[in-house]
Image (cartoon, rainbow, N blue to C red):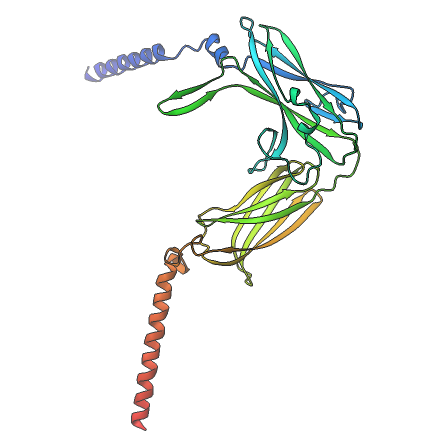
Length: 345
C-alpha cells in the first residue's frame, strides 16, 4: 500500500510539472518574426557588360571611355509601410582576418592603385537616398564612367543598401546597440577578361607592440584579387635557427591593391628584447612568395627576463641564479683542491 501511494504521488508531481512547462512555453507569432526581419531584398539588374547572368553580383567586362549603368533593384516586402534606404558605393579592402570588405568608405586610396570604384562614380551617385513604397520595388542607378586610359587587372568594390526606417541606436544598461539591416552587392570590373593576372605580395613592415605583439603589414601591390591564400610564418632569433614562434593560416582572401595587418603573435609568446627575423611563406594556387624581414624588440616591448620561462617551466632568472651559484661553488671547490694540493707538495 505504501509503494502504491508513493507511485501515485510521483505521477501527480510529474503531471503538475508537465502542465507548468506547457503553460510557460513562449508563443512565437508570425508578427514577432516579421518585426525582426529585414523586410527587404536587393538584386542586380545586369547591364550588357555582365559576363554571366547568374553570377549574383556585378561581374563586368567594360570598354574604355564608356558609361555603364549599374542598377540595383530594392524590393520593400512590408505591405503596410513605405521604407527609406541609403545606397552607397564603396571600395574593396582586405580585412585583417583575411576576408574582403566590398564597401569600405573610410580608408584612403592605396598608393599602388591607379583607380578605385569610387573614382568611376560621380559624387552625386556615391550616396543616394530612396523611398520604396509599401509592397513595391524601385531601381537605383549608379553610372560607372570608365576612364579614357586603359587599366590593367580588376577594380573591385560594392553597392551597399541600408534600411533607414526603423533603424535606430538603442542604449540599454549602458550598452549601445544599433538596430539596422543592410545588404551588399559586389562589383568587379575589368577591361581584359582573359588577361593573365600577376599578383605580388610585399612585407611592408613589422610592427612590435608591448607584450610583445608582433604584426606583419602585408601588401598586395597589384590590381589582382585572389583567394585560398595560406600564410606560414616563423620567428627566429637573428643568426639562430631555433623557431621561437610558428603560425599558419589558410583560405585568406585578398582584395586588389590593398594591405592588411597579419597578427604573427600575440602577447602569449616569451620573446624578450633582441634582434629577430620574421620569415613568411605565402601561397595561393601556383602563386608563391617568400618574404623575410628583420625587426627589433626593445626592453620595454619584450617579456622581462624575470617572467620568461625556461627548461621544465622554471623561470629563466631562477635558472640564471642557479647556474651562477653552481659556477661559484665549482670555483670555490677548485680553489680549495688547488690549495690542498699545494700544501701537500
